[in-house]
Image (tube, rainbow over all chains, first blue to last red; front, side, top):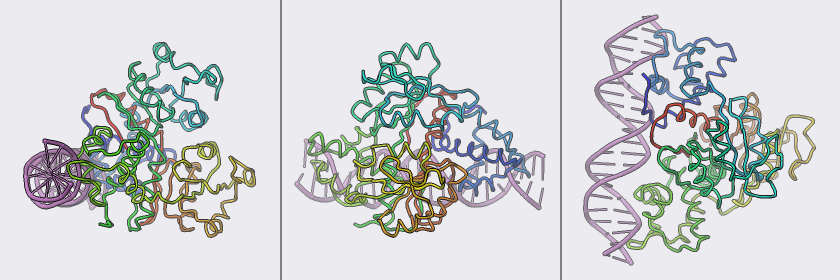
Length: 216
Length: 216
DNA sequence: ATATGTGAACCAGTTCACAGCG
DNA sequence: CGCTGTGAACTGGTTCACATAT
């Protein structure tokens, strides 16, 4: 049961399950049924069972899922047993906000280096991180174990930066730039764009209609 | 052709189209075919044509879509002809980052008020915005035209805050808190959680397999 | 000739229904 | 008996194929 072709929708729900199970674990809940987990996450129990069954038989019939077991399994499936080092590209207003954001480290994600092209920034220390010239990226990647890059550069520089990240061997990118980046097959990119989210909200506000909606 | 039941997936692609068309407009491109727009956005031309056809007949056979026309239409469809005022709830580290982020205003989204529960914060000025007690929210909503709330409070306060937002009549929420919030039907909530995005990336890094992936 | 708009065909993802196990 | 795990049925979203317009 070591799968190799999980639908992407399923992969996107896994972190959700993990988060729920972390919470349950903290609350000392020991067993949870797909029923209860489902009503908590607003996902159908069948969905949850099917998703989890891609990876193994974690549940106990008649009982449910051991929270502890599920926690461990999801941690392993998602690759969260190690700490992940990341490089931040772009230390403008957005980049600085990301650097000062304390939400990554508790989850095992660490910004280990930051880069910029602006000569005025290079050498400066921002949130305990010395800004380096982006030309040093490849070398830095060799000597440290950075596997994820966060892109926080302006729109017009983003594609170029992403290209050089890929050339340096980065395969995972968290992209905050408002572009539809072109990446070769095998490279994973995840976009974060609050403005686009807001625009779907205003669509609903403008086109008054019933029914709530969600995304991930 | 004024629709009332557009699939949510379609709604989520509209901002993407809008962004592309904005860019094309800036580049003085006058006409674009679904073909070309598709290869730019990595979306099939048929998909684009079908999506747009929900809202009208914007294209010209044999030519393509007038960029200008499409820009205007999408602006109208998404409700972006007006400026939207937003309330930010929570001015901790994350909230401050959001306040200082300059990416909202150029797109017509303005943080018009910010709130917190921490007495130490109340009355302080953060990025030109005076922090108010959250108890003043309902009044503030009455006197201004705020229709969107941004939630940037800690996990354990988020559901409570969202409940009171809903009670105050807010129907659109951009949620940065790592929770699966319960909202009544008719309320739209969009979650932004970079950690979850990172976790899907580490899944792919850990379970080495081919094929790139994307989300929105 | 070229590109849109759209019903029909197709496919992926979700839900159903139930067998199997604790 | 309760809840998981899963093939089968279904749903809705995407792509195909072509009629239609310029």
